[in-house]
Length: 594
Image (cartoon, rainbow, N blue to C red; front, side):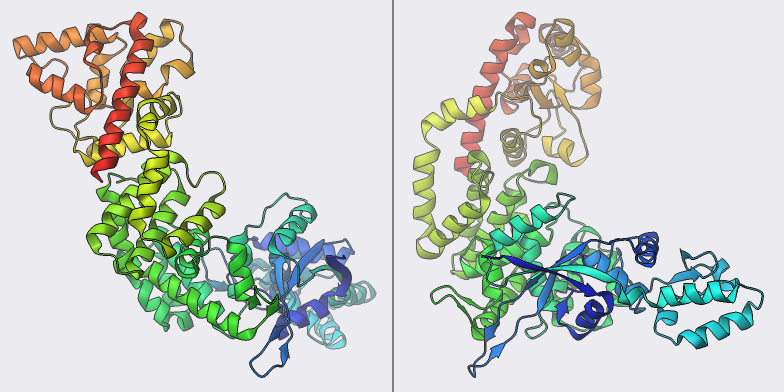
């Protein structure tokens, strides 16, 4: 079966399709990221007759309407947006939305004698030998433009200039390749074709396809919905972007969506900064009880999975349902309550959350349980425990969409208490805590999710930093404190250990820098001897700890075996084994306390 067609079309034909909506360029599917010089270079390539590549469009399927008639699907541009947007800007003089979401015009100037293009600038505007804006020339009359130019520049070679004008005005007659993908292709096939055609090796995610479907739909206000998604994600990172929306998108600023995301203008929390992929995945999964975004693309197209047809009523319902999901996601109360729950589990910094999929599903779970009417105390416990469970088991690290799909269908059809109990019995047995988890802690990767859960457990129990009398681990994490080595790195290196050995996470601890400096490169038995001397003499040479009870308590909360006080290089491997077991037991107690 032929999966696509390839045809050459005049640029003016392509631009006519864009203006009429036959080809839909989602307004802010991606902002226009080319700088003006690339637009200039594209115009020069067309003028010189060089090829400018292909654009790829995927025709929406024909949708059956309520009255039984068929609505012919538009072509949705999925690759080549930057080139087509550049053509509309330079040739038609249209506005583009730039990297900062401002509507601007890109004006390309042309020098007919030198046959050279340049981005319009103040110097060009003062120089009569330049045509300052090619869009005005291309849409104008050749003879009028030539006469006006010659009146300003009487000494130029008129024949040469007329040829240049003619070539310039013929740019819309140049051809560009259009690869049109068949409407009945599934999203996996479209993705595969895209990857094979795209020489840059760019992978278009299923979220990109979903965003294209949403943004190109005006019938159900998909374009407005897409802006809400995009603007929320942008504001979450840069609250000052609020003013840009007010100044540059006055229509959107009047919408209900804008009213619902205004709270972000004063929000500086960065624990969870979702991108559009995260937002659309959470909104979709929580509302549709499905985990595969390819299903969303199909539903927004009106797909009837049972009869394999496309129906307008399904598309309409799907957009309405997705809007409910997006509104639930961006709701200030939901978002802030969810972050409070995550923080109360000890995850107070984004550097403690390595798995975006895990926190995404935690939010899905929060929204779903709230929708199902679970009480707030149960929701808090379930969300915290599921987040930690999914991190410890790597549940969403392999095939997250399959896991999302399976889990949300279970949650929608079965009491969550039962689901959680089954998972814990199957995957968090005593063998996991006593053998599997200590083994997982045998790694030199500081960003290990197991180490992050350990640190979260320390935050949850208000543990103090190693050898600190008052400074909490949470303070050291929040205030950019440093992780240091219990067996000093320099000491281990001098004794011949390589990076994988001395950087073991069982050798890591949050420690005040001033304490670490005093520890230096001494083996533990030596710096603990100083500490004992300080306790005996109340001199506080190394730490504020001044009793043996305080010392033992500090070792326990940091899961440091008491034997460390007498250890040197010969004991290092034994120390690592002991500490991993202690860390695993602390994580176990923490998990069951959630």
